[in-house]
Image (tube, rainbow, N blue to C red):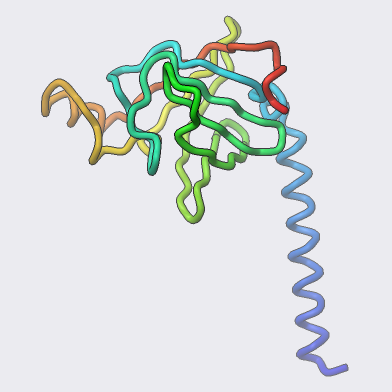
Length: 159
């Protein structure tokens, strides 16, 4: 076996170990289990919000279902049809929502009173934003938005 082949095998081996360790670390995050379930938007800074790329009209009352298999299904208020499915990953206090090659990041917190608060400048489609005025738009663009969700179930919707 040549030195080059041996080096390639070692490289692949180390990448495999790194992936396994990262996967283990992500599944061990206690917030990973706590976020599973059906959540309803309780409050928004401005309505509607638009989550790239297919969820254009998200109002208070829309549903976020964080499934245990890493899928996030978003259903607009008063609808029986999802607007889109995403995958999600949790790293410490950051939630990454993934659609194809697009990653939208949000910091999040599970509060003692049972709410999930997400804060982001990415979970908002600025081109489709409907804001009262340009000053509000500029403020939201500079500071990001906070989405506050309340648990809609007792972890039964994660299947």
